[in-house]
Length: 140
Image 1 (cartoon, rainbow, N blue to C red):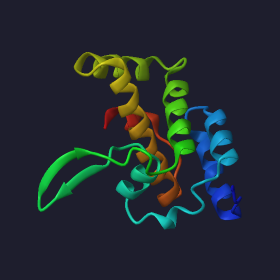
Image 2 (image 1 turned 120 degrees about the vertical axis):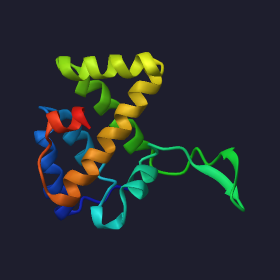
Image 3 (image 1 turned 90 degrees about the vertical axis):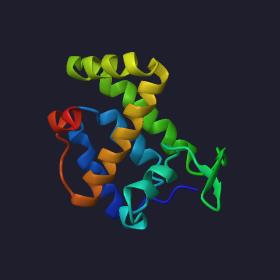
């Protein structure tokens, strides 16, 4: 069930500055699953909740692979995947950045990395109550 929380919706309105990606902010408003950003003490917790990273199975310092692919929010994974594709539209610097990344990894992995990077950017935008800086985003 979706719960529209007024504070979250106010903070999500800041996403309209995300390089003219009004569609993404509409998707996040529609699937307002974040509630408040204060729920997440770190960016890693937020990325994990959004299914932007893989879960590790480990015990006693030994890693036994990945597991728990269903942990997190599927809607947010979809939203950030769509955000990555929409971010690339009519954005030559972002396309050049993705092409460089796709040479190192494959194209699908590069889009996943971009979705994770956008998720981190959204977390810090909401946490710090700032707008999106595309130049800083692509240079980091």
